[in-house]
Image 1: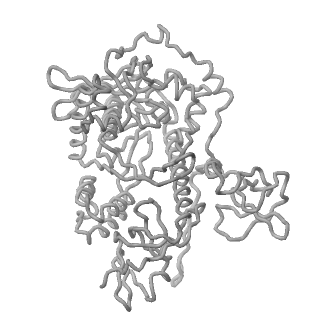
Image 2: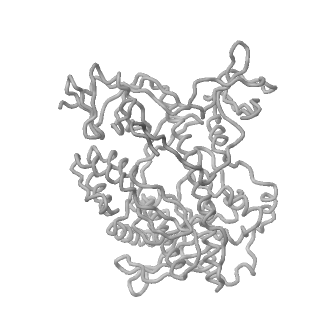
Image 3: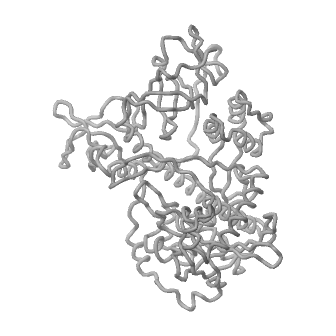
Length: 582
């Protein structure tokens, strides 16, 4: 029984072991009085750990090393943090990312036929006479989705979404399948891709290269003039893409660029039809409350291997076109699987927690962005406040706060709907080269089309594993990009930047630099000679001066210190940021 006057300590119990602890640690090698020491990244303690010996690897103080957790010996030396490629190696080791495929998987990949036989073509619908294109980024390497369109005599549009048939080559229980399942996803690091499948598959046999016959799974979706789906069919198929287009070239065509329109004259009519259909699909999704975050993202700009600038990447109309078609195909496949009572791996997005919605409601109120009572907030309400904030100074802050309130989308064997897309049934079908759940969905769909009753086992544990691997890959990419941005900023100490206040913590005020997508801390002592109190959860007010700082407010700051590896920086307010008076 809890005693009066004493706080009860939090208690918990282990319910499931998600990942066994690795037997290695990463950190800095140090020496003290000639003896070897180690400062691990993962420890909150400032104390260094004595090592058994320096070993034969002979690291220098300040180098990043990998140490055996139990034996306290150095297993490998990664190099100094500033050396090219060391940051990538650190992320690979830190997140235990797979770099090499098993010899058995490599051997299986090497034995795969490069040509499609007459037998492999049997029973497949032939779309090779259709004008079919891939649309990807300039630096894309694996092309696993292609699209085509036809206008029907009724005025309806028939959209073809053609996806590489990876399941034809990667069979359940094979070494290729085991390696792909373990990885669960391709990992995209700056300048390096760790593919889910060997290159012979991801960049060649399964890649939908222009003017080459490829095995695919096709979703043929018929939409009426309002963009409503009226019919869907699915086929094992054959395609031959007419062209490998980029988002940039398609966007130029949409903007009326004469040179691009002449270059791709045979494709322009179909691309304009696609544009029209995508706009209708997007409008219908938004009407239902689907959340579209057209967020600026950091793009690292290199010149001769050196990071020269941080640019803002923004999706354009061509990105939106492919996004709409992939969402439509994923939704149609999920509906087919659910309608036929088939087991599957769904992509689900749980509603936000009531407490997070209440906090969001409180934060947005002072901006005039009003939400209903917590229990009645829908995705349509969130879409409305995002729309109201468009073009205003607080737009980025509002987007950030809405994103914070949302939960992560995950894979699940149970279909519980997708809150963010405002869709009841959704799965991942369109990227089997780089996502294992998509490969599983292909197998289930293909079996169903052949009249078989698929009985895949352990879908719940598979969904959990794939969700964890996806989260790990995303974190590795995010941390590496941030590390490089902070390292870039280290050369700009003392310079002034514009930022936005995104948080208030016990340590001070968190400010995100608007042009660099990373944040830093303005400590309490650097706010001025005053005692600041937090008012209404979003405002700091100086007791003596009345000076106030609010969440979402733009401020000028000076960069005082940067620690790239820890991804931290210290900021001080510029004299140009006087704050408001309360």
